[in-house]
Image 1 (cartoon, rainbow, N blue to C red):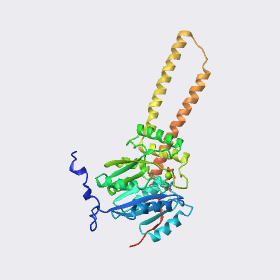
Image 2: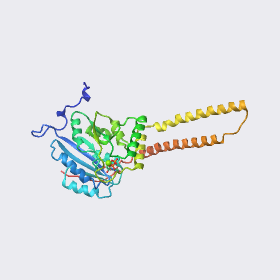
Image 3: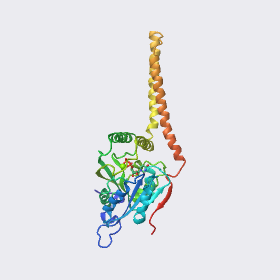
Length: 337
Ligand code: UDP
Ligand code: MG
């Protein structure tokens, strides 16, 4: 296939620094960005797993950026102990819990690698996949998404609500989100720089990743259950997360009221006309209390929903206009050269 010169896939030899000594594979600087909230039970397993994969791989120069998102279970102390003996580990301690999206943003701002992989600490994002992703990056892709092909590890309500969310989102919002793709993906430095130019402070990362685009490849994997600990996303948090996604990337819920209002007004005009004609033909009658009550409460409900939707957007616009920072760093723990 012919590509214009600007988007031609880069040949494998060109991506990464030239190999050292007799290495044939060029060296790539990889940053893992790991947001952690109360992951005391999983971070050790995570680091062991990462060590098993990358310790003996000379083609990868690794940096692991943990973002401590307000943990209260000793996660920070554990990570700091590891950071003291392992210079690949950096720990960014946020001043409180800012949420996973803000924590990821902090990690992306601090990571230095040529390729960056946001990854969960609970081993639900299998680190083995990263080598395959790097292979595709070397072929010239800027983004390599990891797609879950089997979500049996997630509960049925979670799977169902997620599938409804994607259907609704992709119906009303632009750009479309690829289904079953989370934050776990490989992104090139160029993509990170593009993400940094997006000024919004409320960051729905999946949407922002999709918005910036770039040449994208996909690898499939089966999502395992959590290695230890428990999920930080309950039903209410997921619901708010879904609202965030929809309101960040679509104005359809705002605009639908114009059409709904027009439709209801049109129908009520026709109904009025019908009553008028009936009075002229059959004379005056006064039944209709039940239909009046139903119409009133139904329309009252619709109006409240409309005001609620306005509130969702207005509230977000209000928070956005404050231009508050996305996160506050308490301290960065890193090895000084
Ligand atoms: N996380 C975070 N801040 C939060 C919630 C979660 O940094 O406010 C981290 C969490 O520690 C984990 C990742 O985000 O590393 C994914 O969270 P979890 O595994 O609970 O989500 P699930 O896989 O259940 O969707
Ligand atoms: Mg998880």
